[in-house]
Image (tube, rainbow, N blue to C red):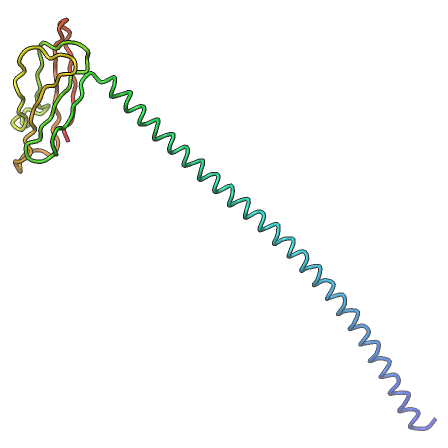
Length: 183
């Protein structure tokens, strides 16, 4: 064998090795492509599942928020009902007739369903009695009628709030008392 045959044989071996290497690379490329397609499909499924879960969570959050709004509204209504019921049970209603400045006029309405034959109003702290001016009660005070008084706020020394005590005697000579803070 001469040198050209050896060269051709060497080139043949190199060509076969190169062909085997190329075939191996093709197999690896196809496997990588297949894995990539599988990963893409898995990612798409995961994305769909995540989207469905987030939609479900958003719907749950919206339902929860709506439920909380309904609960808050019901609680507010219950508080209003309780306040109305409590006011209905109070034998006396203290009501401001004017704004809380200057000489503020107030009234105390008789809700006892009894005739009141005697009543008095005084400041809880005797030092603050100078800021309270009560109109004289003449005759009996019937249910629904009111006693009027003034809380003098126009003096810089007058308190911002005044705690008062109201005492009464009903027609059947039963005595009662209540306190209230004028604000």
